Image (cartoon, rainbow, N blue to C red; front, side, top):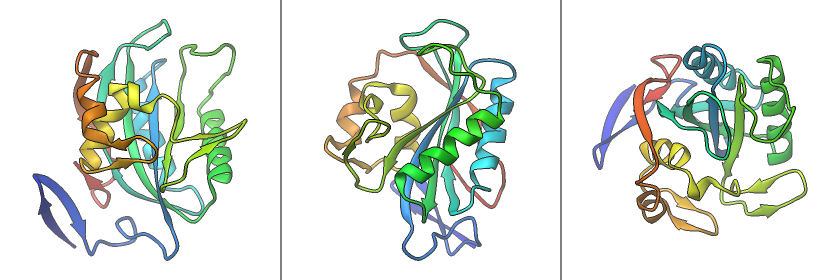
Length: 193
């Protein structure tokens, strides 16, 4: 495997199974967050678990970020974003993400409650969807630094379907408290930024 440079970002070229997307796969992004228990460990373990979801390949993961809860109470959140290449459709991927949350002890007591693990399907290719159970892109991703900073770290030229380039949206969140705190990637075979 070799590393290439692109605008100050590292890109994995010709990697093994963790760096290649299967034929017909869709590029999806998943927000990973936790603010209960050992949150950093939980987020790292969740990244590892995402790489084992049938029909998914973990392509890249952002750094870990610490941020204040938004419209919620409790301890600071630890957040990251994972890039997946998946042959699943969006509703099936969402169900698999919810099953992972449950496996990590996620309880859905009240909206915005503190959580052991939160997995949000942020983007699914260029799909725009306004469904009862799933909205794509995630309805608030363009308002939250804890989503936009890790997304831009993975792909600074990312286009948000229906919203445009990520850059201007990221600039609008520059007053939100967020701190990059560490590495989230579970394996040296996965592209780390």
